[in-house]
Length: 262
Image (cartoon, rainbow, N blue to C red; front, side):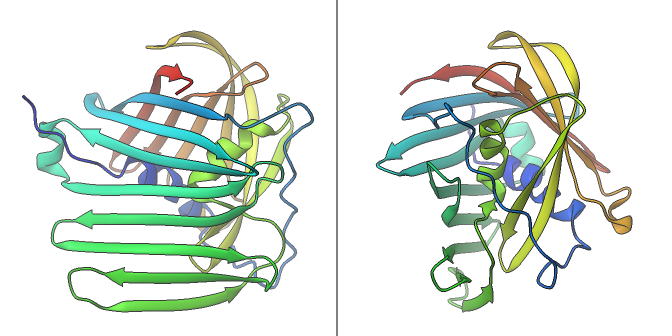
């Protein structure tokens, strides 16, 4: 039996959004409002999305996203497993959980558990909208060191994990863009989602008509940092059928294997 570990596909993919927006210090600028989901859209009551993940031309493993509703709150989790060959190159185990408002899209809490070699760090980012601040609590399990930081926030925000799936709730029209204010620990950046065109895409889950979207941030220093594309199904669901991050050290691609309502 092949040994399987978790690999940080999601932080690599989603943290690119922050790299692309690295020069945008927005505490003194006006952030766009996180637009609520479009009329008629609802986040899944219970759903599991499974993706095949490739690194360059090599099969790297699988990634699993799970949605589960609890009243007005949506719980979103992400995990991934690698085949042993990739694990020999990059031995990491990361897990992510996000809680957000089903009606507004606002993130309330974002948790990460990171294991990288001997380094093990757990962190929780809470967004207190009533007090207008984000609160980060972090603990290095290996050394016992802790960190507590607070920063001001303004308005409804999404996080790095939820942002990709929150975009599914928005209208998408080729040639038109929409903006998402994304919070990473103690930073807030504006990500522009550019709806570039339509493509028919074949993935393990089947053949889909899709809308290709590129998340970007307008800043001079982001050049040559990397690119991201997300292909959403061209229907009411806007399922992320394929996701790709092209970086200087290679390309990571997620291809949808299955959609299960469980």
